[in-house]
Amino acid sequence: MQSRLSGACERRVVKSLITLKPFVHSPKEKKPKHCSTCGSLATLEAYFDVGDSVTMIEKYCDVCSKKIPYGT
Ligand SMILES: [Zn+2]
Image (cartoon, rainbow, N blue to C red; front, side, top):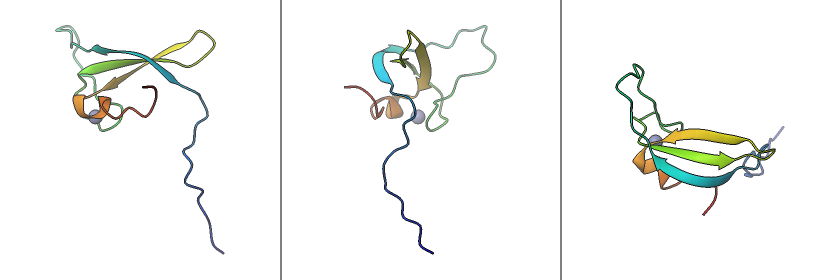
C-alpha cells in the first residue's frame, strides 16, 4: 500500500507576523532561550497574531528569523 503525502504544510492555526523584536537575555534569566526552529541561542522575538486577540511569541535566532514562514 502506497502512502501519498500531499506536501501541504499542516496549518491548524493561521498565524500572522506582527513584529520582530531583538531579544535580550536578562541577567536574571538562568536558562537561555533557544530558537524555536533550530535550537540555537535566540536573538529575536517574533510576535504573531493567532486570532481571538491572542498574541503568541516565539523566539528565533538570526538565521531562522530570516525565514519565518509567516507574514511579509
Ligand atoms: Zn534558529
